[in-house]
Length: 396
Image (cartoon, rainbow, N blue to C red; front, top):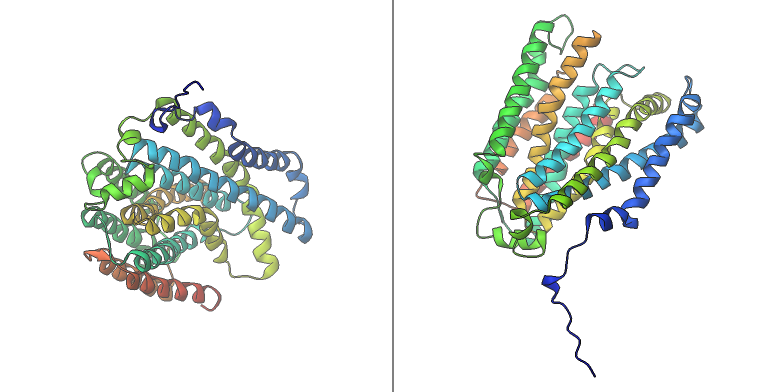
């Protein structure tokens, strides 16, 4: 019998970009989402005329919400491919920015929609803080601590996140209550311009340092770095990050854009249906911001918890704290500029009860992320604050 030589697994060629593009797991969800976009463009204007019939609103909301959630999960999928190719912190940064851009688009759509939306930015930013820092990070630290015990992370990089979070939170949610502008909880035009410039400049500088001189501060510290890389890449972690294939990067970047676009195109209809649904149910107006945050950050939450279970605590922190820094750094200037252009009042200042919850979250975050290692009890404490937030939505 002739001897047949089988290629060693390490010498086999990786999957081609064309194979990735044409894979059914990639194409089928993408086609389904774009079909919803097409239906929205063709029949949406007729179906969603004011007033919208409740049955039509309910069915339309479920279909559009499902399409946006599927697209959001595909965004995470493509961003994770880029993360493996480019390494940290670029990997989590791509994922975070993709999600945050979606958040900004949805908030802007609600602000520019027909309903009353003066507090949508405030409600969304506060919801993101509670959901990401207390809910997602709390759950991630709890399950990671229960599986691995105390977990290591890079305290120097995390302290930079905390510094930006304190400043951005005070600018966005606390300071507006202390100004003397005509509308309570808002900035005057001059103040709005100044705060928008300061926030945008601060975030741009932070982003520049994070990806250049301070890059190593946002990577997993030894001795778990090797383990993290193997879990992420299935090897030593050096191959794909050091020598990413240009065609692979271009392919997944293109797919990332194609999956983000449907969310942009469907955001206006979702905003309209949110207003209709909240009015029909008599639900609290703040629920709109909470729903936007939940819709957008669910895929990232899954990724963060999975990273913690894999003992990649720094990646979890990059996703969680980085998401909030990016959300405020991009959303605050955007909504202030929209308010200035449209003449719409942008109410940002939080209520007394929520301000107390913000202060507690900041204090607990400083305790959690200045410790040498995180543990399950840190996660539990954050989840308790998340429970209080959920309670206050329906019982303010």
